[in-house]
Length: 64
Image 1 (cartoon, helix red, strand yellow):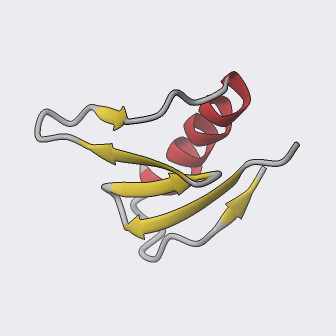
Image 2 (tube, one colour):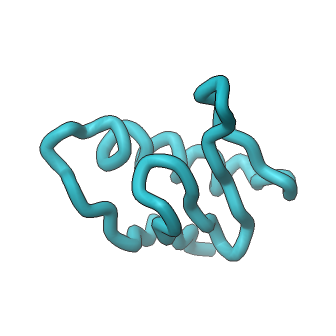
């Protein structure tokens, strides 16, 4: 199964296989629906490679 991550608001809100994840006012990532371990691992990789990379200005859809 693949994991698709779509940016909604770069740096603060994303969709992972149809599940919303967003950054709260304390800087924590929060979901309303539980992520699978595969989805969580993919998001952590995306976060390190894309979200935390200051050289990337526009976040794109990624499939893991």
